[in-house]
Length: 55
Image (cartoon, rainbow, N blue to C red):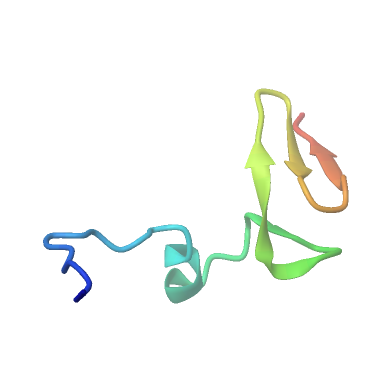
């Protein structure tokens, strides 16, 4: 059987920050490709646990 073609599929915007040159959401320990999760009072890396608290 032939595979079905997916029409009107929007590309993922996860890596749009690479093209814009904004490195503000990347983990400094893990490097580019690992983003920091934005919480109410902090930013946290899900891979290594690195945390930055907001003032």
